[in-house]
Length: 488
Image (cartoon, rainbow, N blue to C red; front, side, top):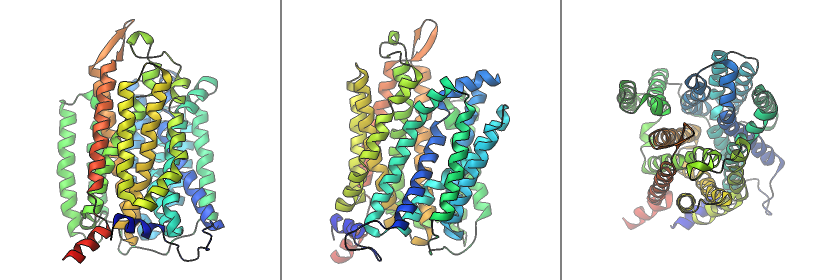
């Protein structure tokens, strides 16, 4: 069997599908609800970025304190995603999607009603519990849609992630200029409530269930390990890479993760089935996901701030926060418009080739950013190319996971893959923050990252994407295993 044969498995006509391949109402409803959930999840990650300075001034807090509005969500989400994935496999994906939608609404409501930084941070931490909607939703689509439409559904959800991330920054900037920033929290309150209602009435619970129970000791160890890993990454530019806090937490993370793997191998009902996830198909896909996650996040941190920098830096355009955010919007639109292309590629050549193609396109986008930056439209073109590649790559990852993971543990496998992308994004944030702090230019007494710092970051992203593409090409699929058996 060839890679094309593997693609044929993804593209075959499923049970209950009419000969014309039309979407039935239940499929449209499921895809609409999951896509909306993906959009909201992406919005929650980017919506506050432009208004953090305004919140800091309004509440009289420090920059470091205000940054915890983002850090708290990241830390809770990193733990919630694999745990909720496992709970979804055990007790139902729809049940956990309802929980996630409720946490989005409740957490946003706490922040919307607060004029106290501590309470806002608590609300944002609760919102982090909703981040598992992405792997849960994709797993539910894999069980709900006809096989030939799974790739299309995943591609659309992946595009919603891009649209949400790209739309959140300019929307928040505009609201921050014309209204109270609490409006941003109310938007996600309403979105969470609508998502809950849509999930309750429009989604059906897939029949696949895992056996066993939640591994509480493993959950605690993984939670502490992830906090020890991601906290220093998010604070590295402020603490310093050589500080005792950074080194101590990273060493602690390594020790705890090694202990976690040992515990999970012996657990009768593991939170993360390390034997299954050590299979080359899953392991290599997750490593490639770290690389692509690294590259994608640099698009967010390396675009708006770049064009907003004063012209006297030698590279900036002195644009407003709104314009800086709008420069990200074409990237999200490219992901949306190319979602049918992503699905067609996955169905035609298979998900691992599609992932490699997407990663190469990402690298090309960052090379454009390095070589062409004299005009604003050149920045937008480079960012859009990188965004388009990210959309193609992100759409292929769940398909690879779906081919390699057992149906009874699909949500947990997708959750681990999402966590790997989060680790990649956190690493990009840490590296970018360090570069921006260490290579600066002075403009009227204010320090801005130098153009060289941005170019080094973009070069690292291009390199990470190329490495991700190379790893993707080595991912074994069922067709490869069949070929090996036939050769033997």
